[in-house]
Length: 136
Image (cartoon, rainbow, N blue to C red; front, side, top):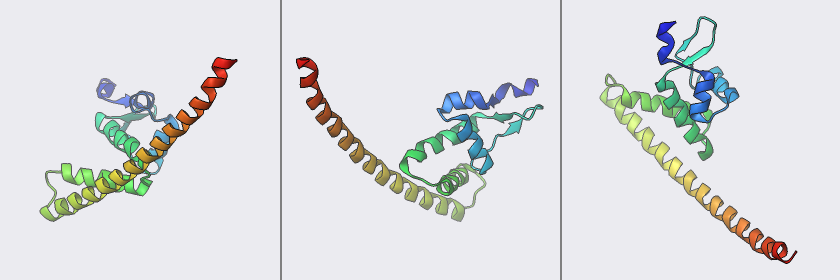
């Protein structure tokens, strides 16, 4: 069990990523991010690399990426990090990465607009509520 020191249990992963246990288990079940090991008791054990992959997914989720797109991006990043990947594989991965970046930028801009509208709305409500609160 001494080798387990470099592994994190699912609760620790949830704490570090801000993802629920249910979400982390779901990502394992669909093959998105599977734990690198299992304890002798069958508990999921994650490495720092696994946590990094989950953080990538957490960042993609609010931008509207599908599970399939998340899986594809993780594979793309793996190809770019793989020193043994061929030139054509790296070129394809780089093109895919640019497409993901463009989609992320478009989604982020949409979210910024929605957030601006939400801020305007809360300001409107605050302006209407404040006079009533101070006059009561």
